[in-house]
Each structure stands twice: as C-alpha cells, then as structure tokens.
Length: 517
Image 1 (cartoon, rainbow, N blue to C red):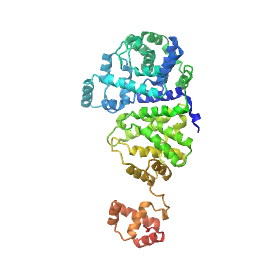
Image 2: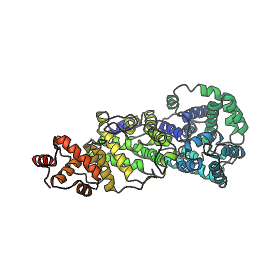
Image 3: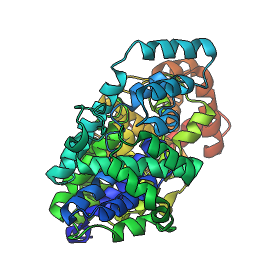
Image 4: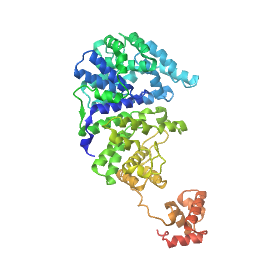
C-alpha cells in the first residue's frame, strides 16, 4: 500500500486520540467527542471566528492528552486503579478547593481496608502541592505531544494551560479571566456539562454550572450552555465520531504521508508514558518489526505499514489500570483478563479513524500466536499472516529485553533463546523468529532439520547420548535437565521410533545418521 494512501485529515487522528484519552481517564468512549461537539456549538453561539473555532475543536479533542504522564503515581496513591480513581474524581476537576478536597478524601482508595486507606489519605494530605504538580505535568506533556501532532501554536498554548480557571486558581500558571485562552474557557464548561448531564441529568448539570459561574467558569460560556446546552447535546445523535468529523471548522487540516510517522511516534509516546516500564517500547517494536519485515522479504510498502502498526499497537494499554502494568508479582486470573483486553481496546480506537484503520487489524493481533494460544481472538495459523506474526515476535523479543516490574531485562542472547523456545512450543514459527532475530543482530540456530519419526531436537540430543552408553543421570547432567525428564524423553523416543530397548534405539539412531557430531 502506498504512502500516499496514508495521507488524511488531522481530525481523524485527533478523534482517535480523544477516544484513547477517554480510556486513559476512565470515561466512556465518545465523552471527548461529545464535549467537542458541544464546545463548537458554544463557539458558534458566541460568534467566534473560524480560526478560534478550529482551536476550540482541537483543544476539546486533546485536552487530556497528558493523562498518561502520571498514571503510575496516581495508581500508587489510589491503591492500584488509577482509572477508577480518575473516573470518581472527574466531576470535581473544576470544583471549589474545599469541595474537591472533601470529595477526594471520601473517594481515595475507597476499596482498601480502612487502616491502609487512612494511611493513603494522610500521605496525600501531607503533600498539598500534589494537585498542582499533577495537572501541570498533564499540561506540559499534552502541549509537547500536540506540537508533534502538527497542532497550531494557539492549540499548543491552550493545552499548556488546560486547567486554568476564570478566578485565577487554576494550573499551571494561575491565569485569570481573559488571560485564560478562550478555547480552555469553553472546553472546561462543555466537558463538565456533558459529564454531569450524563451522570445526573441536565438539571443537575445546570446547578453545577451556575454554582461555578464566575469561579472556575467564564460567566458568558456558562450562560450560553445553560440556555441551549441540553438541546445541543441532544442534537449530537448516535454517531458522535461522524458528527465531530463533519463539524471540523474549515479549512480542514490535513496530514501528509511524510509527516505521518512523526505523528504516529507521538501516539506511541503518549501510550508508553503510561508506565515507567514501557517507555520507548512502542517505538522499539516499530523499528524491529519494520527491519524484520525487510529481512523476511516483504515489500518496502508492507514493511512501512508494519512499522506504523508497531507505533500504535499498544494504544489500548491506556485503558488498563497501572496497578496491573506496574505489578511486581504474578497476576491474578482477574488481572490477566484485564490484560487480555488491551488489544481489543486498541482495535476499537484505531478502527474509528480512517487514517489509522489500515493498521488496526495488524496491531490487534500482536498477542496472537501461531498455535491459537494468544489473545484476544485466539487466531492461529493462516488467520494471522506473516506480518502479524512478525509484529508479535518483535513485540515479544523487545519486551524480553526491557525491565519489567516482576523481572530484570534479559540479555539479547537470552531473549533470543527464549524466542526460539517459543518456536519449539509451537507459538511462533521459524520464519518470523529468524527474521526478528536477524533484525535484532542475534544469530538464530541452524534451520530445523526434518527428523525421522517426528523426533524433536531435544529428543535427538537425548537419543545420541543414550546410544553412546550414557546413563539417565549422565544425560541429565549433560543437558542440565532432571533424570525424570530424561526418562520421559526416552519413553517418547521409543514410541516414535517403534523400539523397546536401548539397543533398538541405538540402531535407529545409526540407521538415520543421528550420531554424527
């Protein structure tokens, strides 16, 4: 597929990121899209010019672009589930400080036993700078990522002040009144109106807006939303994605093929900010997968597509709590079920964007395995295709060479051995593993030789030793396995070779030239 086919509208990419930030903040998908559509209606009601409406449009979609920047810290504070905590605190983001603190104390780590919960509350209250530090970090990360997405300076500046308030008590700079970018003033009210209306109904949303009018919110924006907001929300319809794409203020911004990799690398970094253990994982997988595609003989266009799929393959991770990604011990069955969801969540995000849809199916298969043991669909064999298997092998190898909370990083040679063991187990085939190891600069073992009677390489090793007179214990010491395991191998050898004694096994080995050094 040509690079030209990858050109498209910037709005498509930012809509996908909006869906991802919904996942990353514990909100239902399309919350950001509905906020965007409502924000545009307010902009039009206030008579703002087209460039300003365009700024409002992109700020509404990207306001929470920095949400992954402190997910690990939030998870520690919240007892592991940063998403549930963020969702619980969402209605209080622009509350009065006293109201917000009381709500915070009631909801912090609410599922933990009381002594542990009290300890977390005390620790949180002992750090009065925590909220400013967290939200300021969101702003800086969001603004930097937006620059790499090709956003205008007005959008970037607005995102850098995404949590300012009308009364000057916001973050990061304490701007007040008209100093606060107009896009932030509009999106702040629209987001809270959508959230409160969805949670508690329009009457409750109106009460909140009026209570915060002149405090957190610009009075003019509140008046416009209170007057017509219920009607505007009802008019969004059942397909907010299409409604938002159609509503982009003219002229529509485009992203050319030559700039797409820069933008997708920003998506990768947004994803990998989620955990300290994931930093640069997506970009590393992307480079390795593209190089492996070349080593496997794929076309340049297919290698490019695979590299781009690698950049976005893990975006669904943002919808899984950090208490799982940062967990230092074995995961429970319930935690594993959450882990298995992340390719599905990523697939949902990518398929909603025409610009990213060509990478969605590949990205969603990065944990599938050749024998059907992977997830989330349990696809196998020809259902996967070489490109998907290459991505899965590249992801597995690269993850092995990275530190994880439950283990140190493996040396490249050790990671290569483990990947080859996956071939023996049937989860990968030699084609993709050889290509990945070649791309990683690791020598693969010699090509698998077809062995008689279906013997495995390990069984041939055992057979060669017993044919030369070694005892089970000596074979075990030579191969660094247990004598019991040697016994199991010998049973399999006898069955496959159709023999019942060591003499018969020895003759079988000699007949098939299995004793050559």
